[in-house]
Length: 288
Image (cartoon, rainbow, N blue to C red):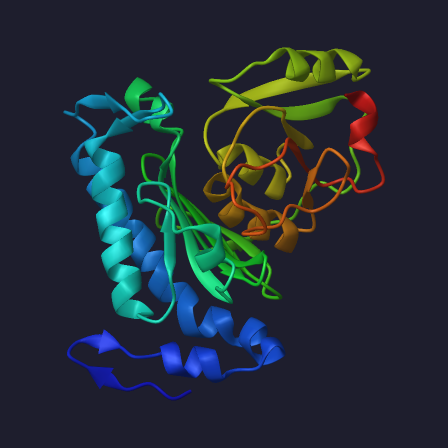
């Protein structure tokens, strides 16, 4: 696989752009995954350096912002620019380009440097670094890293989904394809709207595991939960990395009409309400 080393930077962008779609998706893990995992670890280190002492501001949408969000953003942005200088980056902590500009992108990085800022502020450890590569309108590589507990989830299209815990070797993860009678729900620790309460009430029997950030989707990916129903506002950087992990683990992330989520298809970057699940035989929309 051709690489050249220039000024300490791997110049692989020309190789990526030259690959066909099928070759790109089959080779992406070998080309990028290990390097992007290292970037996620570096971002996690930056977050943890601010964990004991930080201030909180409010963004224009009234969501919280800390120095840890910005530190992780800077690490990821600089590292991805060095790794793949020809691929655009869209981050929660940067101003998004206009849709006419974004609509011309064939591939781009979509990142949430610190997913679960409220969990970070509450110091419960349930926050993650999310990095995804979008090809066309779908995620083809995703990394979700929880630095406090040392859990790393990752996947690339066609390569399966994996979890690595601290110093342990990575293990392949799979969703639970057949729900038990008592459905296990991964529920948001910070958001409990009326629609979610009604969804839970409509299930015949269930229990809820409260969890923050993209870790809820990862619980589904590793078969510890059957469904995560997000019936409130989220943005595309909240779901992209987890989506390819869930899909490679055998599950789906769909809107409430059971259609897979897609990316960069409209001016706004908000997701529709969605389901994350492993059992594809169920129409989860019937419980709304």
